[in-house]
Image 1 (tube, one colour):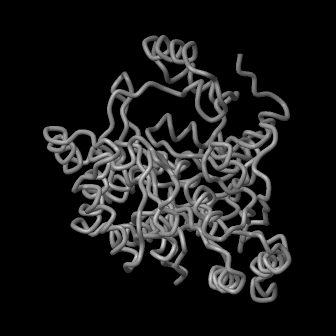
Image 2: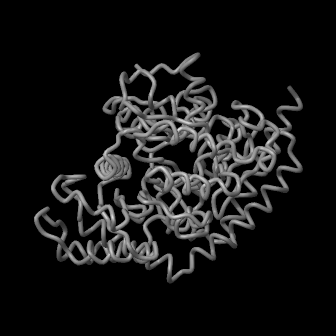
Image 3: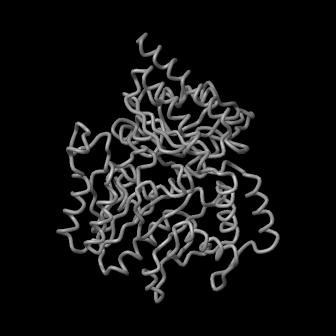
Length: 456
């Protein structure tokens, strides 16, 4: 059985997404799922291990295309969640065509051989970084995180890491050791040793300077990292997202420049995990480009597979190509030609459809609307955005769930993060009219929730 009550439910609310057992979800199911969907959901519940944030599931899908997902009854939802894989939308015809073509020739590449799509993708990714990087591919970003940690230990001869509380780097034991979300760490037992954690650089809710005055704070969050590096001589790497994607949590100005300089001073590698942030989500190809800082190691994932295939990459500076005597990943699908062909086509689509500019343009529209909502609705405490990703913070957890399910009823899907944040990440290919429809659905849900709050 899968009981999430009391303390466990409260803990689940602080995590990566909406919880899968709640009063609001039960009510939504009664009113919105058919008998056929209920039968399949019961089968799903019967055959899968239950875990927070997924099984039991919400609904049953039969198709996805562009900005939309569709359930058994043919109801469509604009998907502003997408598990962060849909930068170029779902089932993009160019990716489907490329994969269909690849299937007719080389569908798999055994490990002792290479293939042209893999070589071309590694070259393109290095070019996008300005050159001087080498790649390793893996079936998922959690595996790429593991490779990055191993490489960091090998090239530095050290074993400790610094990462952020509230961060997420995957669900394997090594990834949750550096990750900072308790829902993934709690009750597992001993994790990797040497994993130091620091408070996230939240310029909106700084724990070092509670009034949020970053200038007066003088980057205490970054200086704390240097303080640790100065005293812990065996830190191999600082690993972090350039900004926390689900919370849309940009660091204060100068933070990454300070950390980059501190890492250089102490011989520590800087790893950026851009699993969910890469490939135009922030209106730049890579999120770290907003901060004019280059990492030693870069992790890419999710959208790299075109929203179709699980695929990730580790990029490392040439100078760290020194461990050829051992295995970093050695994954069966390391140079899978289908995955690599998908990745190449994703890069081509971003270039040809000018999706970086589109993310900037549509992102500004979304932010303008959300700022209007912030002014209008007292329940909104904060709005954050970068490119075509936004976080709308509400004043309580229950209201966030209420608004999400109201939006689902009307055809808009998105994620709840940290209990109170409505995280909006539409595909970069979304039509302008679809964006306006989605914002109208959200606005109406805020009206309904606010009116209900007043009555009670």
